[in-house]
Image (cartoon, rainbow over all chains, first blue to last red; front, side, top):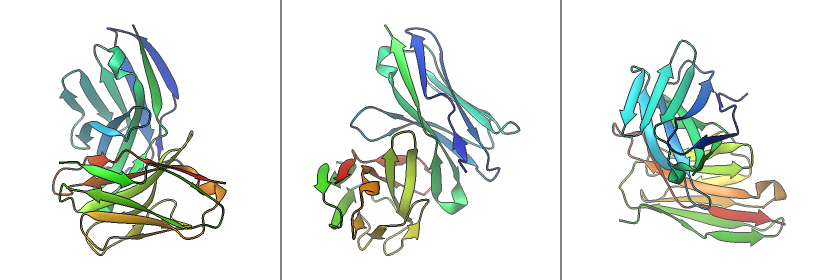
Length: 112
Length: 113
């Protein structure tokens, strides 16, 4: 049973436009959510996170929105740049367990 | 400050052989993790450690063992490799003291023939 789902395996966006990546989860005990970016042949790198007590967190071009009632989070990238082309993973944690559950990833391609 | 390093970067094993993957971090992090990444499966947690001398099972622990004898090192062992263990393995560490993001190593690509 996949507790964290990224239902879109891929997404293409024009440079300068908004990229919206979605993530759904099933475990109501999750209280912390993170987004990672991964380039080929590299390890994932942390992008942005949000605690369950918030509904929005912003860092430069990246904003994460959390809708707890819908068990849904999204990552917005505005404006999108070609260097943003990568695989994006969302992850969720019940911090008391020390464990993180990752989604399957969404491959973003930003077209110049 | 090298962050998280993994040794080796690539390895080819024959079925039944054993090997140990080494992960080292220089950030004095308490928590360390081993994941495997397979196509279409995302990152799946194999084992993790919340401190020196501790280990715990993750989502897919079968066929693997781990040890955390020193705070900075986390070893992943395959006692008898199987083709199903062909994967890319990532180690990660996190502070665990109010900062929850994980720092990942560059990965080890393992092929079992």
